[in-house]
Image (cartoon, rainbow, N blue to C red; front, side, top):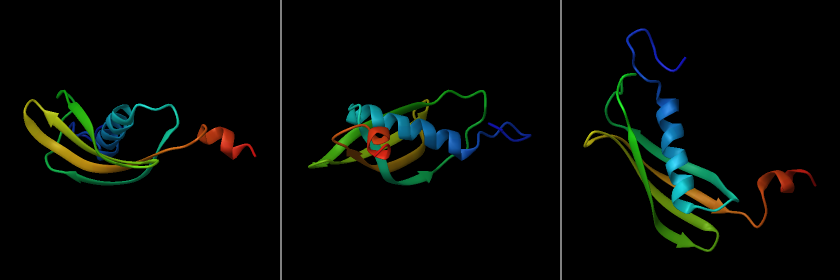
Amino acid sequence: MITDDTGLIHGGFIFSLADYAAMLAVNHPNVVLGSAEIKFLKPVRKEESLLAEGKVIEKKGKKNIVKVEVRRDNLLVCEGTFVCFILEEHILKRDER
């Protein structure tokens, strides 16, 4: 399910890479994704390598705004803005109550 018959990578997998880059940019064990706005700019094929880079561009208390770019070589294939929140405790601990 990663690719279709032509070898095109489904966008959900590219989104997952971008999301992971956003979480790494925040670098906190209790970070969660609140929302994301993402644009897919170019197709990606299964034999191509991607590099994702996330950078925190704004912090407001627990809220972090992260800009993420995903590139194939130097070509931008995907970009997005991720709103991440740092919780006081792990999300699963909060859910157990």
